[in-house]
Length: 551
Ligand code: AMP
Image 1 (cartoon, rainbow, N blue to C red):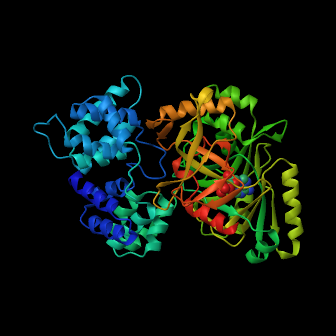
Image 2 (cartoon, rainbow, N blue to C red):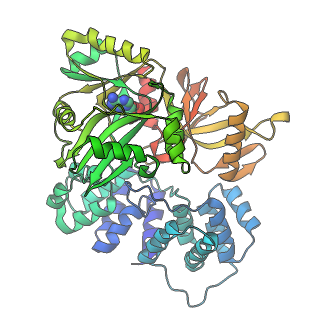
């Protein structure tokens, strides 16, 4: 199957903003594909060659792609850089550059989806000596055979920004429509497998019944269930009926899997960090049965038994070397709060039942292995939930979680059945898409950061410039990162690849036509650089609007 056909689909998708039209385009295309191709297209439509559960990335920087484009069409790197600066996008720059291409490729074969997909996967596996040259040679094979429109989407796929306005929802609807399957069945299959390749192939081969049989597997991470901000306790607890209130620990969330005797630890971004936490692997081996399971908990760093701020645990987990030294210096404590799988999938069980199972299977006699402090609350003992909140804050934790005891675990959802009640004001995690250099003495530093949120199609929409909350060392660090990620600079303005996540506090959300979301923030302050989060984990425009409405 020719890559050009997929590229034509990309173009058609980019040309419309209407969701129903996008769904039609995807559905019509998927119906024409064989099982092997549909598996690949399922991922390529979302601009990737790996399922969402995988932390593998294509991993090619924009600069390397620009260099390869220059070589492929026989022009200078400076020419490519100029075009990218003018167009603000590598894909559009390619369209312009390929029209003037001086190099013709003889005997070139049309690119196939198979070849493109396999080459992109190969790129992610290259490391070590001479890796740049090996990457360039694969890029050249692709880019020198590409048409202008193929180059447009190839380069965007390589830089992981496809810009066709297609999120998970549209792909899901497209699969449902193509094979006449209920949308909710496709949605559930995607939620449980996190793999559009498997979902599309199963839909094609086995239809709705096949999709219904897909389930969680121990060993493959699932997106965690997320929390919304809680209304006052007196309002929400009667609404839930029976709630489970727990201390909210301020660390990192771990999803721990045991499958066929092997223990694996994932972050909430589904990144495998098993290698960084050997003592936690050992702890699980000792404290939980030797069965297949998936459990979740919060991991915190401690000193003299007291919790340390969140940044400490992050340093520990990010560490690649001297893990042993860190193990001795930063003792860790784990607080388990959920079980998703124990011998069989458990997510459809009520939370109260899951918690009972968790209590049964965990031996918490080791100081490092704990179950979260919890309390069952109804409208008759709301005061106890308030006391738990106070004692949690006094113990240097963040607040409490309030969870509906009757509810299943719904992966990837930020719903009303799991809430957080915190002492600190709310913040939003945003992605940096650009910035402005300072003036005078500050001219070497990017002093102000253009931050954005994600819309339903995974596109970034600007919200504000954040310029306060940064000390000199952080400014220097961030400026360095901005230079590494630079796409273009014009005057004092810089545009960067969307990779840096900042946690932004603010006093109020206001309407503003100046920003792409239509809203902006009053007094935005950078609270943290969230190195534990990536572009997919930032907050959404939808969330901003619901916070605005709640104000
Ligand atoms: P959010 O990340 O905004 O959805 O807030 C919920 C986060 O709080 C979870 O992702 C966990 O990392 C963390 N957390 C801390 N303690 C608990 C707990 N007892 N139950 C659930 N989540 C917890």
